[in-house]
Image (tube, rainbow, N blue to C red; front, side, top):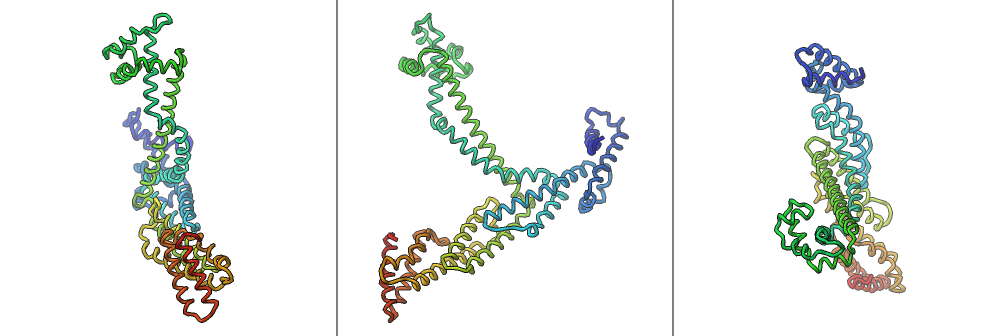
Length: 432
């Protein structure tokens, strides 16, 4: 007997399925004992059970089902830990951060505790994580697939009407006599009561469908169908089948999209459930690392422009964190963090203007502008400031510098004040 077979057989016997439980009780008891021994023979399983709050009761055969559930969860600990570590590393990578195996050591401990205390929740966790990770790409691909059916979606009403006309026409031809259309039959069909019509159209139990077919058939409609498709029944049939296939494929594509979105929502709900994942510890770790990244960006060697670019990335990562499905910014003092980012970015702008003035040439306006143009062109936003607010801040800082330069007795400073004023004028006119 293969390992695990005794456990499966014992479980079946315990349910009484197709068995005389009373007669077979000694056999069932023997199989329970054998199955329990097989489970306990799994390397590391006894040490795992020892952490259970009711460990002393788990060596009895009467607890086979409980031990079996725990064994199943135990078998998934390594795989789930590996999947979850990879998942959290990807979350960090999306934020421009890195998490090491050592930093994620607590994840393995959490998974093992989950397997001990909630083996049922643990059983499907690996698949839940995979669903959450893989579904967004599938939704993206399905969105592309849906776009192939946009013509059907956009023309759905027209297609339904066209199909009704074609089916009505196909049924009208049943009144033909020889090669001549029987107009008496057409009139009879048009004015017939529902009982008569239901016998001559598809969906014969649907009175509304019968009415649509009858009302759609007038001389103009018949001539339209003749002109477009001719009188050959096979052409009418092919067009009806094509419309049905297009609608069916479009509905199928939409149905698959609905399934994917429902699956993603369900996976997210399971992952966000209390104590299923160690999200609190992960959030704290990522928030700490993002704060360190901000400090590193502010102290980065190079120009103010270089530091501004790094801080802009921090701002981008912070925005992603705040909008994360896993609520990665929960518990974070977001207001304080944002203020520090804003202050540091504004400081780089002020320093950048000062540096540009120090090296600026005053022989021509064109040469003078070169020190500011590259820096200002990339300033689409500044922390929480949008483009217009960022531009206004830059102008304010330049006016302060103009005031300082005008107080100087140096001829070169006076020239810089004049030229900088022209730069400000161009910025205000959006010409730089």
